[in-house]
Image 1 (spheres, rainbow, N blue to C red):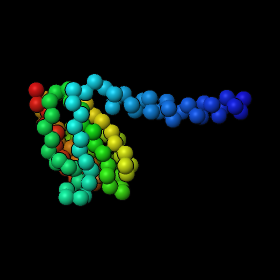
Image 2: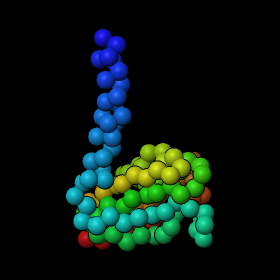
Image 3: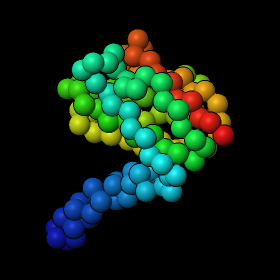
Image 4: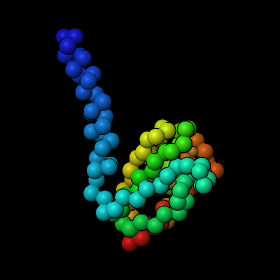
Length: 115
Ligand SMILES: [Cu+2]
């Protein structure tokens, strides 16, 4: 019984990864990267990024505090990105997608999705 619980507990992190990984493993045509940094930038670098429909964007938190990337129209949310962590979002609809950081609204960026 105890062993079974231990085995289940050991599987949980992999189960969670299994849910998170498909975002990264989605068939992205191209994956672009946005750094979250205060080194030579005011948060999102690049602040404006042009991608094509079917591309993905990977936000990487290179600071020592939590951030996120949240579309102003709520069409995407990276979730909270702890220092050193990243998340990938796929863009399937053409248009401008302005976004901010949940904890820090003055941090702004924009993804321009081209057809
Ligand atoms: Cu932030």
